[in-house]
Length: 521
Image 1 (cartoon, one colour):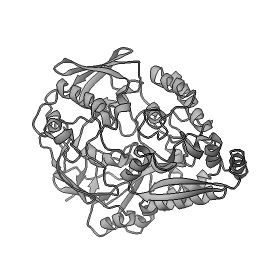
Image 2 (cartoon, helix red, strand yellow; image 1 turned 180 degrees about the vertical axis):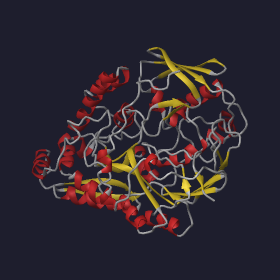
Image 3 (tube, helix red, strand yellow; image 1 turned 60 degrees about the vertical axis):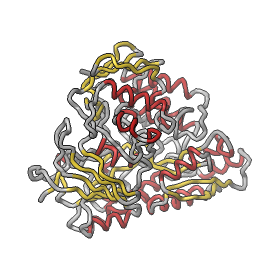
Image 4 (cartoon, rainbow, N blue to C red; image 1 turned 30 degrees about the horizontal axis):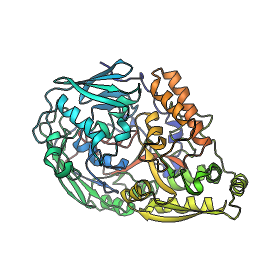
């Protein structure tokens, strides 16, 4: 059985992420193993959870934002799982996988699994799902499986993927949206195949209802193939304003709040009845740039924007020092992050102004910008905008809900920049591919700069750890030299809960699975 294509992925160094703990009020950034031993797990109860973002859809293929996984992983299992602390690949709906040759990936599937609608999970279901990833007109994961030429059921519980070219990232991709298997029967029964609001998977919980912008409700799947969930259900409330979300816990209206920012940790510290936790994360804050047209087509303008930022200050002011104030897409210490270039851009206003002048903007420039509308995002935009303004770069900001900003900037091609958290992908090459490849949904420009494709292909075609690391370090330098985005700082996964909640693990990707969560009576 192959559980990790590349061998054990080195764990992220926690030292740099732990360093900001004092700035956040002394709240511990510690793994669960060093906290006080909890009471024994018990079954029963409905977890009252809160997240700040309403999903665009509960179909894994049509959603867009990482916080969607708070709800998706309640109901869906992936073909391949991952260790939440190391990202090492693990069996899930596929019990094993291997490349039988450089362009053939064979999956052996778990038997005895049923979808929530009672239909069987088998090779036929996987073939239907993977074909839908590529052919469904509303699919946002087409580029993820662009390498796949053909999907075949080569046995009742065996699927073979024939590839156009070798791709070392494919098993990791199958831990993501493309690998979250939707019931074929539910798709066939839905008008136009639209299951955005009627999710049917194989996961530990079954969908009950979704009240838009208010509540997503799920109930225990008593027939779950794996370890049965302790909880009877989860009520996932949606509260867009972060401080209001925290008040639901302090008022006893909820048990846990997800995806908080550093500012809410100080609030939690004042209440001895609450527990605040910050854990290492692969999520980072950046701005997508449309470098295919307009002023951002000029690399000097993009570079000027990057030289205008003081990233350590951004990390301290906006994230309480809990993240990393550098310009890499990955946390310090992660194997794909090159320490030689993670601080490629440091604050240099004179250089920023000189580049703008050379690009024909001696009197400054205005950038049409979309940003999320929540309190933390507005503050982030204000602090970032103030730093850019010192170099003569003015932001014309339109705030909106996350799904709307993606629609405006990436689908309708409005504006020049989108400020957003991103990342949270199990393989670093996939992170680059999702953001900078010509077919990537997150690439508003829909172009690739010369030199990118050679590095991208090399990162996918080599299976040797050391060689792959070298290629990814070169890719990091390429992205920074060409200023393909505006990275600001890496984050931490922050939750606030009551002490009676146990077993929650946000994971490095901020993609929690709730089947091991339990509550004291």
